[in-house]
Length: 238
Image: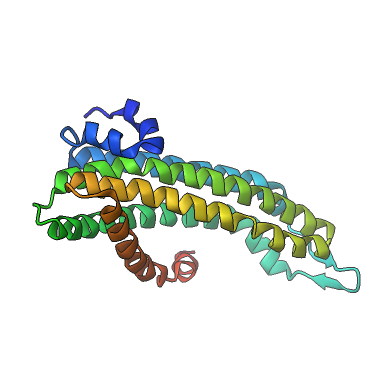
């Protein structure tokens, strides 16, 4: 199996042309494999950035936090648990998140591709759909890196503020994180454009049809996966 590495960067700025050039040569195994690789790289980068941001904090959780007006005591058992289990918990969250991302990606692709094909009265192109959508996950990798870099900065700032007992700074971090929202919106529509184009090209449709179909199906699938209580799963595992 060989990957079309030369097409990956082109997907980010000219997805229609890139997918048109690829559609006759992709297959299911290739699409699944490249998606696993790209999303796994994103997960590894996420874990590394998060741990580098909070590593110094979790090495020694403060037992007291001075708010300026009073001193809040952190129970010893909670502090010990956080020092010991935080790396594992973060690792599990990243791993489960990566698995959910892959699941949502391919489930959404199958449903959106089938609906798009039916709308156009075309045969559903399974091989093309999975193959192209697998390559489209390069945008997920870029999104992950951008968002995690921003969050890692705020996590580092939060950790140092907690240690120093600077409650006002901690409150200001919440305001700063709001700056991520417009960035996330832009990234979402960029992803929608690329994923919708992949669906459209795979099933001989227009880009706008692929985008609309992808959006609707993604919202439904995401709401189903979003109802899963990941926190409970992790705590039961531990």
